[in-house]
Image (cartoon, rainbow, N blue to C red; front, side, top):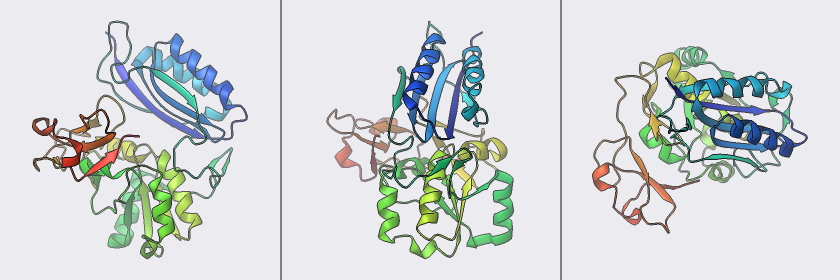
Length: 301
């Protein structure tokens, strides 16, 4: 029986010829019938792929045969299903592109990468080390959400600082404004879905004088695999594919609130108006309400 899977991955490493990597990944993905999104730059690669498990295992062997990607952390999760051709239902197609940044903070000139990864980023914390830090430092520890504000509406670490961001590019502006300068003397733990955004965010914060910056290694995904809903995390994890969100246990709390009626929901949806690119947390009953009626929206990136 076909087993639908999704693999999330990234690697920060200098790439002399990103276009050659693009062609290689496109050809391998097409040959194996995979779907998903990959971004490649001189700083590395960032991607999510869906497909049948045997096909994804073949892709993983090929991917890791390239020395710069050998140690990339591959995060596996369950897919929704496969179509009659064995292709993932969670993605419309395979998209492989070269970009200036593999995660769009709008600051490519600030990012420094060597063969070991991002230079000047935060101290890496495993999920276990995170708990040790909180046990030692208590309320001093500040969780800093490195995702778009909409994602945090349906799931976040308890007590986290959630910046008012519609896109990742908003972080640089907020940091430069001094809005979070009061955190510069505190232990700040950045976190995001799989870890990639915090690789960059923590380096940007360090460069701006934040003295004690950490990044949750493997992101929320790895934390959820370790502690489920019995740790410091509350709610569902927003994901950028057809699943919409994932839960870590059978007792996940629903913390999102419908922007239309206020009902508890983890559901997100795009604005029904084709001229509008906003997205919001909304229950099925309020799905057709226009985005201008919803105060809590974010731009679909």
